[in-house]
Amino acid sequence: MNKNLTARFAPAALTLTALTLGAASAQQSAQRQMTPEMQARLKAMQPVTDLAQTVRLLPDLEKNKATALSKAQAAQLLPILTTLQKAAAVQPNDARKYLTQIEDKILTSKQLTALDGLFLKAEKEREAQRAQTQGQGGGNRPAGQGVGRPDQNGQGQGGQPGQFNPFKQDRLADGLKAYVALLKKK
Image: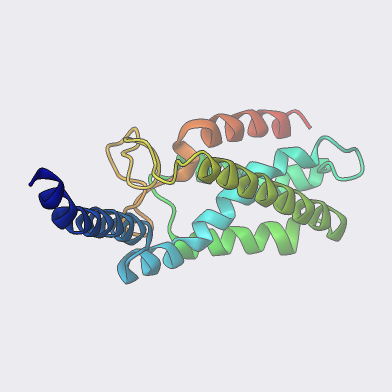
């Protein structure tokens, strides 16, 4: 009788297991998809993100004498960088304005080309890290990391556009401080 009972319930148990695993998989992939609100917020913050990445990579131009900033360029860039350091929040429109000034009025075409190369290199490194993380089965962020993590002021990074300053956080703040000191020496 046990064999008969097991034979009758085994397909049901397998179906239930498959449905449970399928639901868990669907839930996990649904968690990874961004809501339209999140996508809109990310799009609105894109100028701030672009400016942050540019500022983060600017010190790398100094590694090559051919792309290092001149004394005149440093003098033009310093007011922008010190404004970013002091700002309570960076508005997307301000970020667009600063990025335009840096790219159109301060950097040379040779420096912009070098900066583009640095962007591509950074993107390849991020892709490699993503692939490695996914290969290890780690698609989810550990608690307390990533978008939405409160910064030193208790504001979430994933807040509304212009409610945080990426230049006051972690390595970007430290890197900017060091770069400003370097430019002041020119």
